[in-house]
Figure 1 (tube, rainbow, N blue to C red):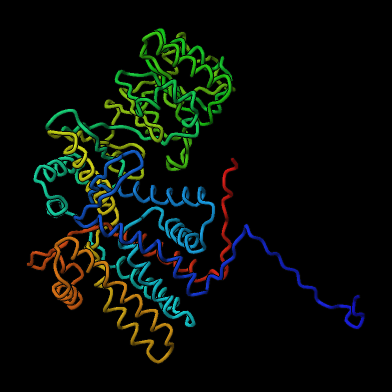
Figure 2 (cartoon, rainbow, N blue to C red; figure 1 turned 180 degrees about the horizontal axis):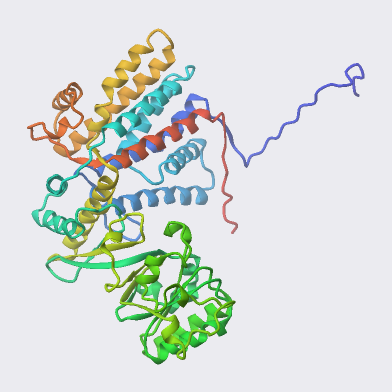
Length: 560
């Protein structure tokens, strides 16, 4: 029966399902569970950083191994493997408790927000600030936290340290590494680059075959590989899956093709000519390479490899955005670098060129390069004859000098450890710091922000109590990174740590921590790493605080 006295009665519908758990994100127990695995990650990172080591067992090793704090790549792999194990556990387990599900969701959220910068500073600040937000569930302190973090980013930007002289950089290098031979080889690399290390792709640190270190210098043009380099048949024809690297040691031909390469007839004469003179062919296109043309290139590579010929064909894509928005015809530096015989007139355009590049018109179309090195990610072309040193100093230019550092040692363990140490010092710390600026390390830069935050706190004493609580939470959190770093690095007690922290706060000079004549002096770290850390932290806290409902997914167990 329907009550006709209420013709417009409101009907309420609801859905209840066992396969879509829904949680109240504002509930204290939910927030506690979301933060649990982030706290565990914080313990993991703090246990293997600042001269500490971590004992861990990987998937393919039966015995545990020690993980050094300097091996940033393996630390990242441990984190990824840990998160992957949580996925496997949830998918294979018949029933996952709400606590386990929320813990994994909280960790995934944090890692997504900090994908490019997982550090103990990031986890320490996130845990501290999130716990303060959970402590006041009825008060919105996020405004005060954001104000404090914004002030910190602005303060660090204004006070970042720029090292301009080689003497200052050499002093930093001595402080970054503990072994004298590591310091000497880094200084040697920097001198070759004229201390202009502005990118992390200018120095490659790999395992050498000798006891001593070797440095190889090349001058080349860099290309990022296109989607063609994900084609499995093409990669197999170049033996990329097996060797991880394509290296052309002899002079190669270069053909610049304007457009998308589809028809085999437009490239077969060039491939035949390259095979005849036993040279490799580098094809630079402004479009893609697909269809019969790509098939012909793959067949060419496989046939020559089986026949013992060194002739290979590689395809690179020219992208205007990576070359200062210049079209291929306008890029005079690149055309000169490739030694094209007639400049832009040597560019082959099927719609306008009268001849197809072949043996008959080789002196019209084909340029040349000395050597080439390519991985599945990037390719470097090297040509010493047409190298312009001034272009190599422009970090935005694809034309640059690159160095390969072959690390030596007496045994495999020593070499692997030195590769991790040198790669971290050169490509993680120095390259970022010399390009963007430095900050005092060990969390001491955050300590210098505290006096300004205290002043902001006094300014809002009468206006809004919630802002004061947020600023207090930021101040409290900024103490933890330096205390943890000093404890891990030197094993000092809490009273000595508090004394050093207090001295750092009272000293008005931003870089005074570098000048303190005590045994606990610190080093420098890149400014952009800390700035990214704080920016990502703001995104994480904003997401956590703005969520009202969490809808979780359940993996169905495999059917037997």
